[in-house]
Length: 51
Image 1 (tube, one colour):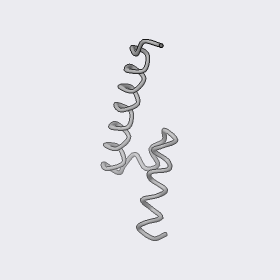
Image 2: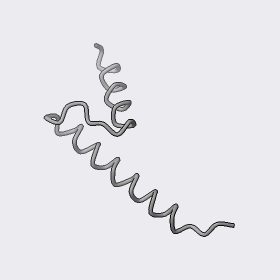
Image 3: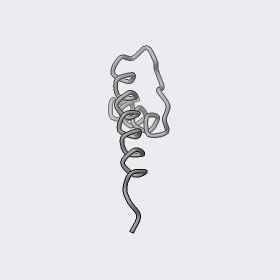
């Protein structure tokens, strides 16, 4: 697998809410950051008044 394919696979897994290799510190950091962004997005969406 080329480095580009590895990066694409990692990003695809993170987008699906998975961490492909929990031993990889970079993958764990990205998963945590993604979780924080999703939580903040959900929070802001729920607080936005409907028009």
